[in-house]
Image (tube, rainbow, N blue to C red; front, side):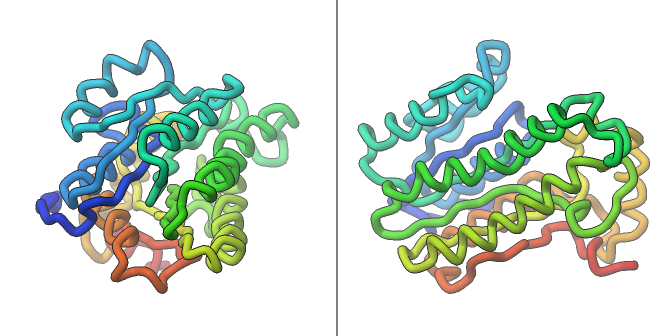
Length: 261
């Protein structure tokens, strides 16, 4: 059973950027719904003109005051978003980075066979982009803030068919720790959220993903899959001042899957 997003003005006055909504099944959309339900004001991005018709109605649903394209392969687009945020709000309280990508031929093969260009693309989009967004967000987080990215259990354990993305997520989790250490003195917290298997469009590219979903239900103590709303609420909590002394975490929202051998 999916948990409801309860409306409560816990984050009223907070302003944040959500990057990575593709459609209403995206984890980033679950985060946007939760942050908005808790009273935050949002900026939302979409990948390109093809994706815009799917994302624009969702942005309107959460009352996003900024809606802009971000294709990380196009130089200057992410910088333009942060420039717009500075002109419109003058400050920023949180960023949700929910982006990962690996070319199909790179993701589908063995790690030992990964081509250099495929490796670099995977690391650029899945890891370096978060570091870059942290750098852009830092001067706008004048009163502190929180940076979030999405990871997965395959960063720590070998998950069949996750392949090179597991390597990228391991690098991403390490980046979270270093960013937390570097930005902590400014009151900026940094977290990786590690959802259990969720049936998103991005996950559909992983071979035999349906079998992974079945295994998750069978193995996890909760005996059910997490929803995008479960992930969103947990993420939004960490942006609240009640979590001000939590940073550098990898927070598992997976029904306990990661504790079972």
